[in-house]
Image (cartoon, rainbow, N blue to C red; front, side):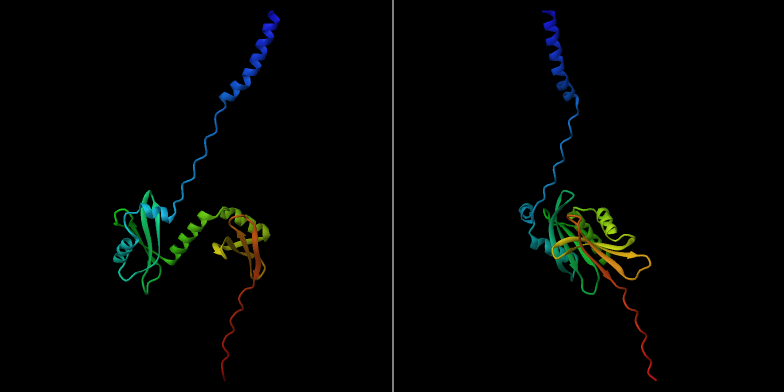
Length: 205
């Protein structure tokens, strides 16, 4: 009888140990939910100020300006109309933000062409699945011994790509490599010669 009880106790203990060990294992934190992307139609339902009224506020802020683009977006939790306006004879754009709930003018800033390009690059970077660092590594692997002279993230024929201009020391021209910003695959490669030097004008006798 004693041996039977001892054996049964040993089996029960063996069965209990894995459950106990499992109970002590810290649970993995649940992944953070992705922020919901609201469409323009969904945002428009929440706006209390119409697009026409907000446009009038923006044009009043920039007399003589022409709206080149507009967007309804949520920024820092606030629903706003964001306008890009151009002024004749002035480079860059005037960016005006209007509160979509109150109709108040929130912000007015000037963006130079360089600022505009930088912002466009940042917007495209949010869409890319492949980082610039990973795409650069792919381009360098494609052209051994080269160094990156310049790069740009752009949309070409509906496809988001990293475009690299690369230089190999001791050679003329540049190597162009395009890397898909969504898959990381090389989708284009070519060579571009240096521009021919301009010949001086021939002097007539």
